[in-house]
Image (cartoon, rainbow, N blue to C red):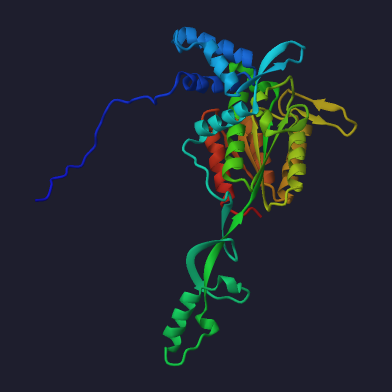
Length: 372
């Protein structure tokens, strides 16, 4: 007698993950240490305030117990501050944990893939078999010929009595090239990134950490370089990202673009691109004599023309620029539109929410095509 099996859905109340007291606090700590740009003491002060308000700990496990566990697990270390006093700093282990948290937070369910190469739409003598077959063409490598399919064609075309294998019988298994991408991420650290009561540098920093973690873990054959630009532009390493902060700077977009192109000229990868995160207008350029020309009042024609020239230069080098403008001013959009037209790149006008997902989607889109 067959059993009557019923299928359906079982609904029950949500149960939060069973985390240890340390893990619960560590999740909050990683967020706080990002906002404080690596300042451990300030992050702990914030954590203590949150504890008072939301009762994060109890008598069995206190904030002091948490700090002691951070030491034991290798997340913090004693160090000497710039002013000569003793203090506490985070370790490389914490830096990695922050980058992974940013990746999980922004890109959700992304998982590491195997080889970390990028497929393009171009078929031919590539690296990875597609499972699809086509006729043999002069120049195809012998190693790509499918013997099974070719022999089958020979029997169908010529019969089995007197076996013949001709060029017309040969079948090749298609393959796809695996493209490699070199990316430069430009981050605006001018003073406007924290003006008007809005913290714009922390989301930008999170995006940079997440993108760096994504590329180094999922696409290890790609390269990611990060630079910041204020009055000047300079490169920073991935490990420096948690400590990134703004300065009393103007916005020298030209210097950032010049450095980005210099970096990409040295890369051997065919596919190259620049991502630029900015919230303001270009307001500074460095003259040949080393002096700075600055103008924060509106769009200075002398400055923006140099930006357009850099955009055109990048186009000649086959380097597309994708601009993520965290501003909605019509006159800035007009500038970005002309800048994008000069480069034949792309531009997104966005708030802070969804910035990470937008950058990831654009990165994934670009890696699927061969940029010429």
